[in-house]
Length: 285
Image 1 (cartoon, rainbow, N blue to C red):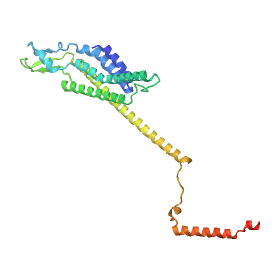
Image 2: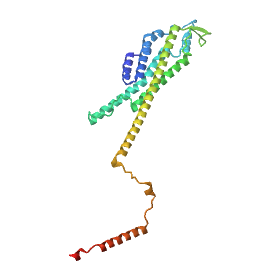
Image 3: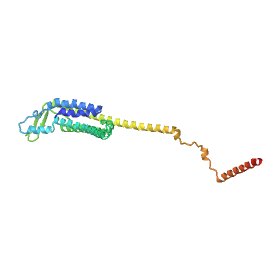
Image 4: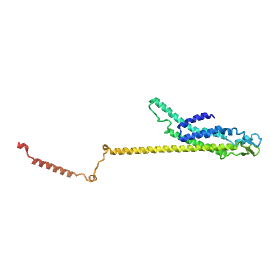
């Protein structure tokens, strides 16, 4: 495996990760990849040669080794590291897709226009892609730990195993090479994997809590803006359409036709009397 190429690919993921994501990437490189390359491969090496059985029966050591080690630790960890880092490339691909859309948008509408404020900012679809990648990484880590636990019985490597598989003539004692050293590295890799699971869960909680807090702040600011707009509308004299009417005026009944007719008749009689009492100026001239 070309670990330098692998590291170059993952270095791009670090630019779009949160603080928890950067810690997770550091743990993967320092406590898993470096330990795997520097020490683990040399400890295991060709472990089938170090698997000795007290028999010369042809085929018996090979069958016993395959029975107790159906999957080599070193190859299982290599697959785990590859699979667990693949979801992170989803984020890189999504950012590259955004960059391509931004480039096409500027080429069409001009360099002054923007489709995204920041293509690497975790909003909208990129936020969901990042969250899905975290769930995928956590699920892969748990799955590989379960496989290792299922195959090797609680990650334990005994010094002596007894084999009764054909073509062995009878019960055969087989000895594992460097059992204590392999056990230490097994527990170390399992612990590093568990630490990565904890970091992924913390990052999931952090992203969801941050998103909920942002939505709550938007709702509060919107309600505050609506309340200020409502107060300004009531204080504006041009928008104040309220009529101050007393309750007693609302309770009074409208005048009847007869009352209105009598009032008009009295007013006309008064006008005639005023005209009759007025002096005739034309006769005086």
